[in-house]
Image 1 (tube, each protein chain N blue to C red):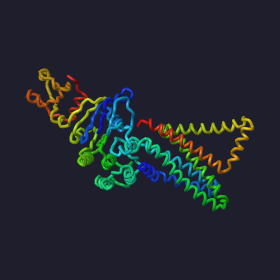
Image 2: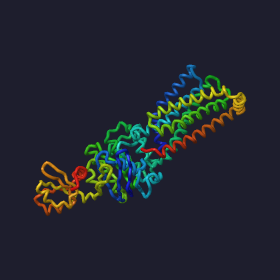
Image 3: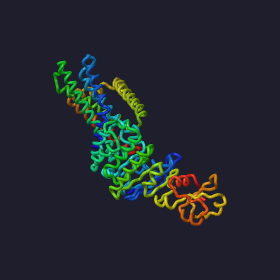
Image 4: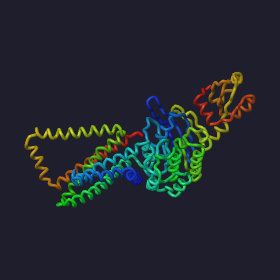
Length: 283
Length: 221
């Protein structure tokens, strides 16, 4: 579906350099701190900016070469960008009908009703949550094969976040070949949604893992100075000095649980992995 | 392109209708008060409204809308084509309304002696409006709102200098050149002048479209 191979983009001191793949039928997550390069990557994938190297292939073509017909298969919800605030939903319905032959007008209107989105109100008067819901709704109601979701849940309350995520889950269930590339600051959103996850840090992809593996096989070892000295460090990905001694990230939790029963080995979570990968050191 | 045209039409209906009504009311008041003539009404409505065409670019730019619009099934080429198409349709609509109002005023003042000449005169105004759009649209696509304002100002100053310079230069030109120029324009007649103006407009629109395509192809969002 999407292949990003050695993409390079330079912005002054910042360099994005990443390789990434989104398979058909998969939800791929992208996490990283602010300024890590997520939006730059998304802009490159959509052909909105030029690259300084590498290759991007979406539906087998470079993004800049995609025709209008091929772009109909893309559904994008970008952070802080959408239809003009001087339009109302009733204005954008005919726009979407004209742009997408597969636009499901009835479903769109039903979902607007369900998600409490008023048809006759200027978008600029919408709350953050309403704007976010509208963006996702526009992206999922025209039968797109590839969805690109840049921070679709940022700034939303728990209820609205769940509504947005449910909408994405429903959309994935409709078509087994559909794919989503999604970024979020909220790890729990990605943990419950994604099949695999990429972590980007200072423009580089520093981790790619299946979500199940990350949650089941990764672990956080908490060891004092003595335990740390005796610890087999072969399967330790990152380590960090803490108040009590050391915190170590491993992708072989079971191994350490079996061989070091006296040590605390906690189950991995995306938050911990992010913290350790970006803040820890290789041992 | 149809979808983007609908978007701009809706923006026009939501935001431009008040401007348009104000233009009509202003022009009619000036005309009825005897401070202008019906021909001014047509030119005023058509030319001022042509600026709204270009302002739809500002709506696309505002709040980063560009980013999202470019993810829709619209190519950069299609975006430029739509802006020119929208400019053409909206100025034609404004011109037609202006023409109807102007004609009503002409009839009311009993001044409509030659309808063909009147329509021909009014046609020049829509050509001027398209030249305006042709100059401003590429500037607006190239520069952000604030910078575009300065560039527009510079363009106005350059045009004034060129016109003033041209008039000054004519005084220093040999008589036979000036005379043959005047003779050429006289020989053209009304129809010929209109054809010449249409040709100049067509060239301006063509050059402007090519520039806009070039600017849009290189634009980073």
